[in-house]
Length: 159
Image (cartoon, rainbow, N blue to C red):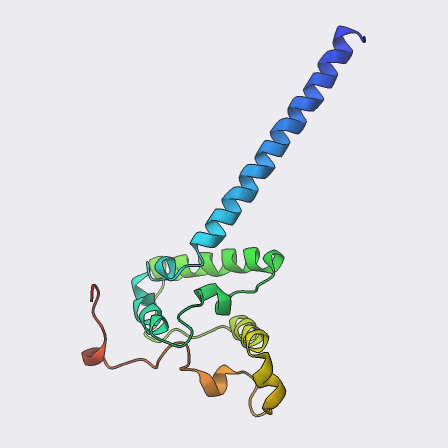
């Protein structure tokens, strides 16, 4: 047995380790829960500017995919900072900026969407010449989201 001072040092180390582990578990769980919650169409459509985009996605051939299956990197180390930056930008624009009628992708988002298309449609990549355009969406821009409809033809909330 050591002295009281030695036993306190040992106890403090275990206490610090326990609380560090507890904080790590809470951070990991919080991140996992928020990543899953913000991957849903319900979350994305909570901003009124995204309603039409979400609705057209829900009746497309890609309706079984989450928004971030296409619009975010798949590896978690890239996905977290990407979503944090994109989310902060969206919150700022929706709160203080002017939201354009047609939402345009950034070059980074286009690259991510393109890579996700290529990852999922592997057989197409092998059987079709993919050098006609720079991005898949250059030809297939209305596949997951139809073109912007005239106001008279748009669906209304609650249908």
